[in-house]
Every structure is written in structure tokens, then in C-alpha cells.
Amino acid sequence: MASQAFEDIVEDFELLDDWEDRYRYVIERGREMTPLDDALKVPATKVDGCTSQVWLHPRITGGVFSFEGDSDAMIVRGLIAVLRALYDGTPVSKVPGIDAEAELARLALHDHLSSQRSNGLRSMVERIRKVSAEAVRAG
Image (tube, rainbow, N blue to C red):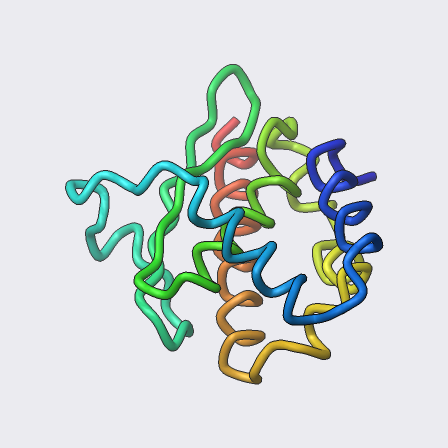
């Protein structure tokens, strides 16, 4: 089950008929995010497999997963914001079980992103799953 924040995005997408409007919506979500501190833009937080520069800085506090992120591409910042809506506030033990592909399919993003952007989005999801799975194993 997706978070309420993600459900809100799904509802907003349903109200927007035009993909240009949806694209602008995603970009606006990215603009609303606080930029990631430059000190956190290091190789350890960089996501490989993305065409643009992407950094994800996960945090697990009290067993709850959250992350900050940033990119040098506005649409990718927006995709990070969408992923934050999907994952932030989730118990870390439940993060690996979220079917991001199915949830994101509700937004039909794959149909409207370039293959490079889709690959980058997949790389971000893989990083989130990896970090959360490692945290669960570390217990």
C-alpha cells in the first residue's frame, strides 16, 4: 500500500489530462524540495546508472526510512520527489516489499520517460531497496 503522499500524487495526475501538465507537475515537486547539502554530494551517495547526476542520502531513524536527494536535472529532481512520497515515513522493514514498479506504473511514467530516465529511476529504486535491506539485516 502506497503512502498518502503518493496517493495524493496519483490523484493529482488523474486531474491532469495533458502529459505536458504532468511533466510540469513532477518538475514543480522537485523544485519544492530542499536542495541536498553539497557536503552530502559525495561518491557514496551518488547513484550509478543515471544519465544526470543523482545523489540519495538515506536516513533511518527509529526504524523509519526517509531520504534526501538531489539531481542536476529538474525532471530527475521531480522523480526523486515522487520516490520520496512513495517511501518516506515507511518502516524500514517494509521498504523492500514496496512494489515501486507497480506503484509508478499507476502514473504511467514509463510511457513518457526516455529509456535513460527510466533506467535512472530504476537505479534510484534499487539503491533505496539495497540501503533498506542492509539496514534490516544489520538489525
